[in-house]
Length: 77
Image (cartoon, rainbow, N blue to C red; front, side):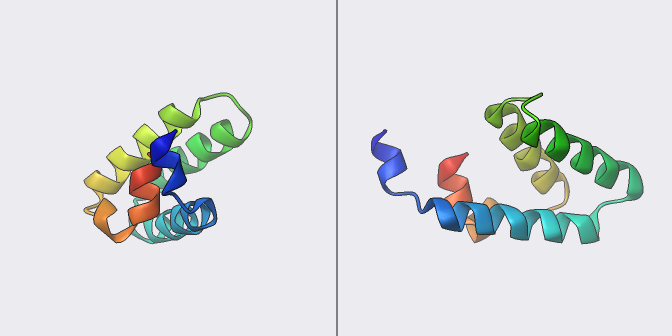
């Protein structure tokens, strides 16, 4: 709970949207389709927040997108 006090949740949402926008420009069609499916599953409650953010971190690393550029999202996940 202490960690959550230092997180700006509005910024987390903005940074997550920025990451998804950037990924949508970098990913090949198959990976983009998987990102879309994971995002839909997350919003529908089919996968947990932890599962979604773990996937997001993995695909960011694969795409050479650093978490340091997204400090609030990094703290959150």
